[in-house]
Image 1 (cartoon, rainbow, N blue to C red):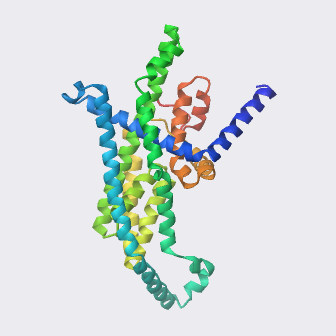
Image 2: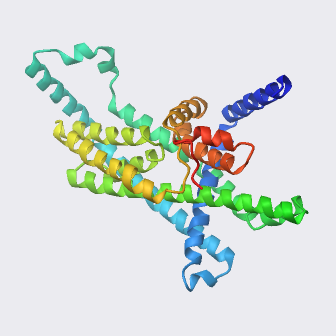
Length: 343
């Protein structure tokens, strides 16, 4: 590779990073719209296999799939809002429990825990901690109108795209090759997003049952948090387990409920992540753990917590696309977990 080409690639990378930083209010909603669009396509494929529904016109299937997805999101949003309201009311009790626990520790070990913690103890405000967590989630999904607007245009563009692709490649052989490539990428990305959503929903639901059994406040909110963070491998599941465990300790004023949450929810994470997910996602490209940490750091610097939540889906999509293009396939192999692409 000559020097001019290296400089050209370097300038492109710098330009992309700058655009991502300064245009994140436009790009993040667009990425969310693409993810929702793929989910709608998956739902539409499932509905098309139903005997009577499959015979309906495509636009009705698309509309029905969109209504199903939006209905689920509205229902989840309503339940989460009510749980957050319930959780906010109990925060003063948490602060009281912290005081009781520190007093018990001081008596047991004859120390002054709050003095040892110093400035950290003075700044420890669970209301602000919860507020920061909620701000991160609402920041990701807050611009609902923009996401829906992008989604509408993507759905309108979908039936026209094959005609555009055919016009772009008049040569039949070239068109068939590009069309097959586009379909393969679409199938791979759609499968990844659909199966990852299913495993995340399974993890969230089982965690909800466990948290409800233990008696944790706002179990739906914590289940939703687990569902979202499950899209971040390794780190996400760890954070999703620690947060409800910490608040369980604060709620009850003792360590036993927190240990129960860590053990039960942690076991659910391990079973789904190490047994169920690999079986379901056998044909999906694996990512190297080192790449996961690097993408978390890079996208976290560029887009903050929203970038961390979207980092792995974005990277998986990029790797899948690179794996299907001969020129970029070596990079996909380099970023994969075992140095081998699943065909």
